[in-house]
Length: 299
Image 1 (cartoon, one colour):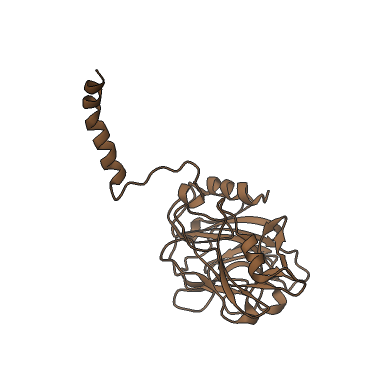
Image 2 (cartoon, rainbow, N blue to C red):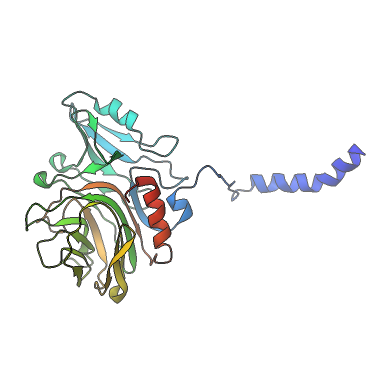
């Protein structure tokens, strides 16, 4: 009887072996399901947490102040930034600072954020302490010290941008806080722009050739979700719709964080995450925002 059962099972056993050794076979890993595993297709994705199960690279590259040596810092097994390795490399003394030279994209073949000028590199450690906001690790851009990063990422509309950042309260009417800005395709006026607490009538706005804004100043930790798609553009702030209409039709060739496109404004902004899809993600917007918020605890 046992022999008969084994003979009957052989075809199924053989088939299972073929499937498991097939070069395109990828077993389902229930314990690993990050944001980009659930909502794929991002053009670029920068974060201080892991966003893709298959991503094997680092999160950031850091320069330490003691001797200007640099080292890549990756993730823990649970997908958080490896702050233990960060502290070991930079040091935890009263004068040990860590500066981000590269913020790696977690999308294969896409372009990283970089800053090669030491004096313009944002901080992630100050005086031996990992910088955090509301308990979450962040990259800090200092408005007074012209700290910024750029990425040679070029996209055309529609594109959907998700960011997690701390927006400061404007201290004067001259403050412009660009969560994101860029260089228009062909050069010239900046795009895309997501700005808060600006010095013009519109205190919150997005821009890709046409200003779409309102007169309400907003600040604090925020998940911004913006679609740039001509007359169908919009901006959501912490899950709620605040702007909709015509934001212009520009594409862009370079994106900046920490400053605007022509380096006339720098921002005192704390950054956690930035993800851009070169598509209209309206159908996934609420789900993506909810997933982002479940990690970063913004609202």
